[in-house]
Amino acid sequence: MRTSTSAPKKRILTGDRPTGALHLGHYVGSLRNRVTLQDDYECFFIIADYQVLTDHLYETEKITQNVREIVLDYLSVGIDPKKSAIFIQSMIPEIAELTMYFSMLVSLSRVQRNPTVKDEIQTAKIKKEQVSYGFVGYPISQAADILVVRANLVPVGEDQLPHLEQTREIARTFNRIFGEVFPVPEALLGEFPRLPGIDGQKMSKSRNNAIFLKDSPEEVAKKVMRAYTDPTRIHATDPGHLEGNVVFAYLDAFCQNQEELNELKSRYKKGTIGDVKVKKRLIEILNDFLNPIRKKRKELEANSKLVEEVLTDGIEKTRREAKETLRLVRKAMHLDYSSFSVV
Ligand code: TRP
Image (cartoon, rainbow, N blue to C red):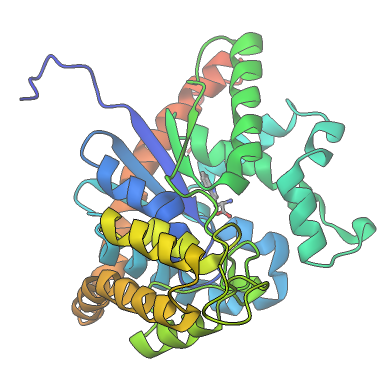
């Protein structure tokens, strides 16, 4: 039992950009961890709308609807708004302020070396000279997301590790120059931090290869039937390969029955089971997993006020922490004008 003298809970901060609904990669990369950790940590989940501006500047009209989708995704997989604060990045002005301070602590060459940012610039097909200042700088703003609540742990997918490394450097640099204000947060990778999309590439909405948590059973079936398996295998009786095989990557992540999984693998390798059979089984497994999530989502959607209420609570709770952090930061930086009677 927790007593009043026990140490305060450590904090988690992680989140997503509101660019669309969440997919299976998000689930096994990070959402599953969030759900299991929300009893042991004080959790903050950010919906990063500033970050959407970095590469969707001409589609801002979709952001509010996407925020709503993400809140529904969170709640339907089991994030409990009574335990965890869910908030919108741009509703916490302290994040922008902290980003300004942090931007002085990072060299230009350091931001330009971030491999995830480089990869995103490639995928977005933006010319190097046209990349905005805000885009290359977003990992600094992400550090502010994390440190504004002085988080200790950040559950993320593998692509976010460079940002976490940057965050840790910023926390250390700040503490060294101005004194200890920030914890140096740790990353927590999901069990399957890099679930591929149905084409074998990184799963992402923009690559059009994702299976979404809100996909219907028919959509899931259609996508799985199209999924990339073993290109060297022509007949069901050819010995198959598991490496790089998307269907087996999904079975690894979602098949609960280890015995069945081992048997499917060994039959596939021997060539005694065809691709279609394995895919059909995967479709059943995925739909069994997704059905309760779909059902919960339907129930939640019926309450039209719910999303706004959840966000209002989350924003209020986060702002209280953010204000305290900025008070500490300004004091440490000798930018403390709290005695002025300016409102
Ligand atoms: N960059 C993350 C993504 O694209 C989203 C994000 C924004 C985030 N702020 C964060 C993740 C802070 C972890 C911590 O998925």
